[in-house]
Length: 210
Image 1 (cartoon, helix red, strand yellow):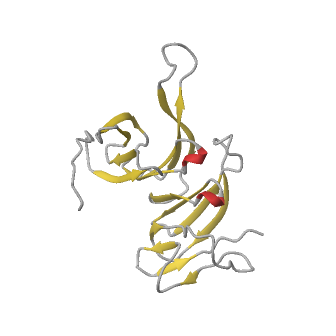
Image 2 (tube, one colour):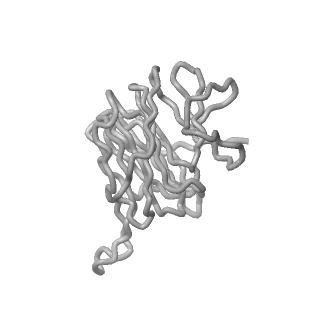
Image 3 (tube, helix red, strand yellow):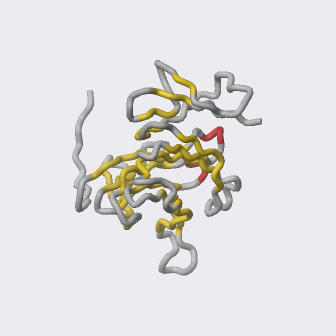
């Protein structure tokens, strides 16, 4: 049986997304108030806001966690046409900051999408630290951090253009399945897709590494 439990999120506008981390002990929320909040679950099961900061200059549509193997990393995207990557840093510089954490922007993907970046999703852990974005412009972009010890450096790996607006992305988490022997391409599928277009026509781009 499911039990509903409300949380006083204290956002000043509409909440657009809620995302749990891998272990389900942390939660992130984002809102039209341009902020992201991070929540930690106590031993008693109560959620407490441990961080809140302004992330964008427009409404924040989505927020998502990377796999914890890569650290405490979040990605957010906004109506201001940007996507950002954030990392939680624990202070060690002096007694006042030691043990306290704060979130630092590692990357700002500025103006890549028009009119707005609506979705961002991290790839499954086995593929490394990869981030996918899409927008109403129908373009899907896949970025990768080649050095997980330096998360401020990301490179654009793939750019896939569609004819329709794109409002949903999902990676296939399974390692099984044979990828194509040539570059990724759009493949119609009536059952599932790695990326879904807003028209409800489903398309899949199978990952392929040479």
